[in-house]
Length: 262
Image (spheres, rainbow, N blue to C red):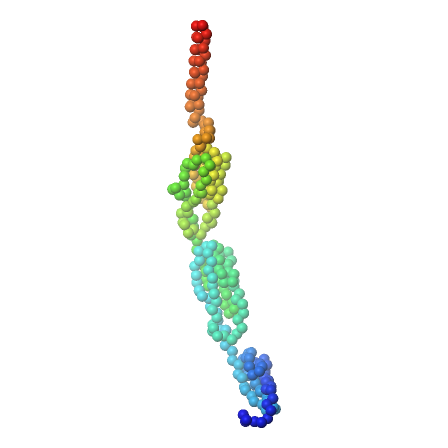
């Protein structure tokens, strides 16, 4: 009885099947489906409890999407859902795979779209699988152009940043721009930054994929800079020379007349 005068010793616990259930200090831990008898002993007196361990197996898994469409170059994260949520199975790590790694890759559930096409992404947990059909789409670039504000004239020493307009702003094609100058002594262009170095006419070229556009830019001399002599200025130079020669001849004639008069 509760009011026994016996000295109560410590309780000893045991289990009839430690593979089904264990017990420590009265705390029973269920390990696998089956039955185990838990025995408590105090002063050679015993009491038992039959423990029936049941399992809730993992029936299936699913992905948060069965199908999805991704633009080339974009990523999307897929997640797994186990069924039932209260399964007693030990859930292992998720293994991911793709049916076509040239179209889309997957790492840790993150899908990366590489090129137009379809690829099936598969997730595996405890031999259960779930799939998502990924469709990768592209927005093809059809052309490029210079903005209307792109200058055609600059002064020596000026620096400007050039840009390119894409016919499809959200194109999934490579947007890398290659810049070149027809004469780097007149103007250089690096990553779109143009530096006017000396007077003259230069052609700036921008290329993206197979598309190429050009812009002719005239670099004007500063007041302190002597403009270069070109074929267009030859008549003017000749006129100046003729005037100078005429003045010289006139001066000589006048001097001779003065000398003869004297």
